[in-house]
Length: 122
Image (cartoon, rainbow, N blue to C red):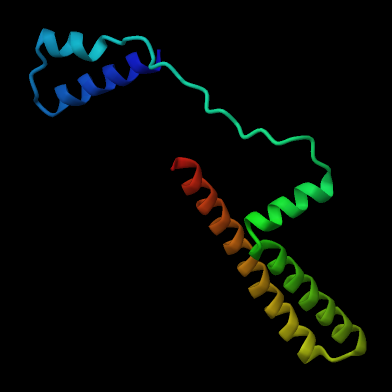
């Protein structure tokens, strides 16, 4: 009944604004037909693949995401080593660089999703 509720709100708003509601407008607003048919979108079917095969396929599809992950891991490791050695200035710099590397990875992930979505529409 959400459609009927919307129609009532529409008619109430029109009445508040001083619009005359004719019986034909009211019946048109209250009529609801069947919902449009939904056609299922076929999902891509891949053969049984192991973790390594899937990882390689995903890396080929979007190579910037693993690169960003490796950069993030490298900067994080270097920052933790600097922290352990007592070089706080370098440690703070590496933690800020880690944030940038994570942002790059996230942007690469979103970009890859957009490219994949655009390819599937064509």
